[in-house]
Image (tube, rainbow, N blue to C red):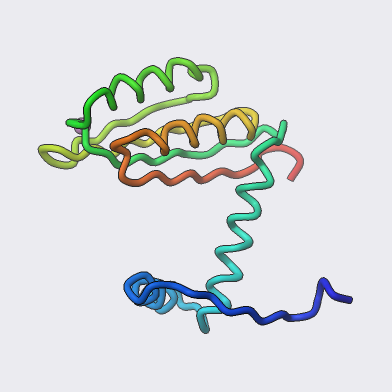
Length: 139
Ligand code: NI
């Protein structure tokens, strides 16, 4: 029963990242690093499994960016117009002089939403992007 056997493996990580990770482990109340990593891996696998999926899902795309970055606003607007049929709402928050937070609520085929999310979060000038999604059919 290889699938159910607990396997051990080593992970290399730079000290700075590890300190931040340990802080996260503590904040989220995980027993240890292993438990936290298992959770992160499960989450990543769920997100990945939806990439080519026809399943209808709903979720949000959160973007944090500097609106001074050249062409960024135009690119963000174009990408959203290209896929307007899966976008239910977009809310823009001006955080300070330079930084913006944009929350995009989406609903549609998982593969289309994933594609939009990849497109938006990979634009130059987007400092942070977070995609969350939940199935709304065939749960
Ligand atoms: Ni703004």
